[in-house]
Length: 130
Ligand SMILES: Cc1cc2nc3c(=O)[nH]c(=O)nc-3n(C[C@H](O)[C@H](O)[C@H](O)COP(=O)(O)OP(=O)(O)OC[C@H]3O[C@@H](n4cnc5c(N)ncnc54)[C@H](O)[C@@H]3O)c2cc1C
Image (cartoon, rainbow, N blue to C red; front, side, top):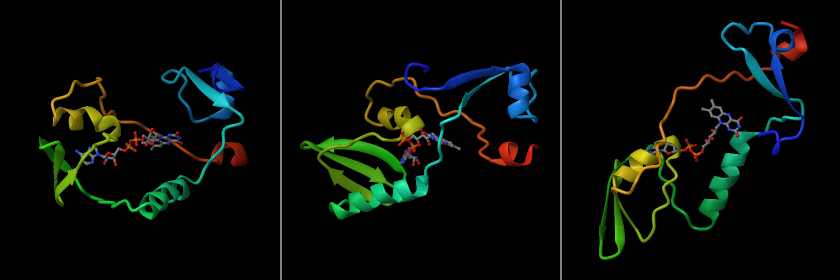
């Protein structure tokens, strides 16, 4: 990781507590700090991709679960909660659930497992000294 990201600092003990006073260092013994990390407007980026996709003639289905996938005469039939979609090619972009989608066409899995994560994004520590 250090080879790919400049200015990574491994923090422990007092150093970690001084940056994140609420942290329990008996449980979380170390942290990684990158002073040059930045926020991006993920919503704007996402909308940019969607607009580009729609602009090139793509059709977007939302709230649309893939239930089964079959193949007839070189065409895939993707059976979804919004009906059947017929396509010549499928890209499996189901993220952490990609193995579950892959299992619908019985291709080998790559051992992906959706995990519960906890994420905390705030400026509080830097600006208020809390
Ligand atoms: C709280 C949080 C904060 C994060 N913050 C950052 C950050 O600051 N910076 C960063 O780089 N990364 C961040 N990440 C990680 C980032 O969101 C993921 O790495 C990224 O979204 C993965 O993209 P993906 O397209 O592979 O999968 P996803 O974005 O997870 O997309 C997979 C999609 O497949 C859909 N899907 C799954 N199964 C089916 C099915 N059977 N039928 C139909 N659709 C299905 C899901 O609904 C989902 O929409 C964060 C993640 C979380 C949870």
